[in-house]
Length: 375
Image 1: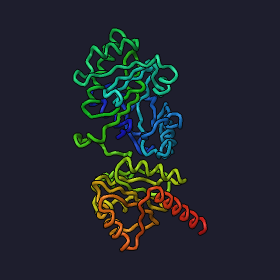
Image 2: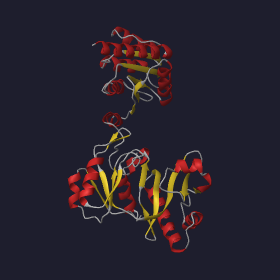
Image 3: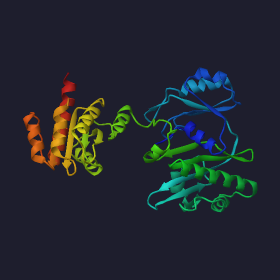
Image 4: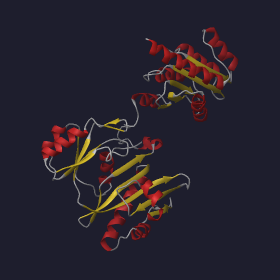
């Protein structure tokens, strides 16, 4: 779960990390009453990167100029996200920029501290063009990130004396935040040298969805669409895509292979929903209700392989809430015969071959597109 910069900085401040004074607004008129020192920087609050290149980060020297800048940024579309809020923060006179982060390294099975003397740019670019400028340290889960390990990293970045001790305080505080809040990523980019002191000019925080139950104060997840949120409340895994075929399956592997099958036959999924193992008739009814709400859906492909899941339960769910758009159904596995008979009695056709089911789904979506063009 990604947080906006202003939300991440609220966490940073809570753990004693130095951040700029700033205020979040959603209307340009609100700037007039802000008690901030000018110049200020106005930053779009979106959950995607590249906002600076898109014109979503601008400087302003006066309240009037700040209002104009905010008005230009609010409502912008940045990589498909509409800017609804901006962070207005006191600008920093940056002397040098660094990068520092803690990230979950799943391949190593450890937390990794990543640092570089080349901050203010995408760390992936630095890693690709100048890998020797990346400092990496693995974190022992039993020891955490002690001050002596932070000093080693700090010295490799060129810090010494008081600046080194300041870096150690920031690095160890960031690790406490990362660990306590169950984060997947806690990043400062840039960690800037301003007036002889270090300042977290930008902040990124990604929290582990699986641990949110431990943190009642966590802000709402703004990455999810309304349908994704509805599916989560129902205990279902749902992801929106940009095609026109709604997909329902049981099990992550089956769902992903279903997307590949549709692509093989020239189709594109509008979304996919995993009802999971042991799916009930009620879960199938809910799933059908959710996936068909996505605008532009012209067909549904239901691909079920019954192991723990019983085909007769799935069939009852389909019959009780029949698809409102043309559907291709593949139903096989546990209680397959009963499930097929339930659908047949309701006048709903279903097959056993996933390839044929995907091909039919793609053809149904194409027919729907042609019918729409003909109107």
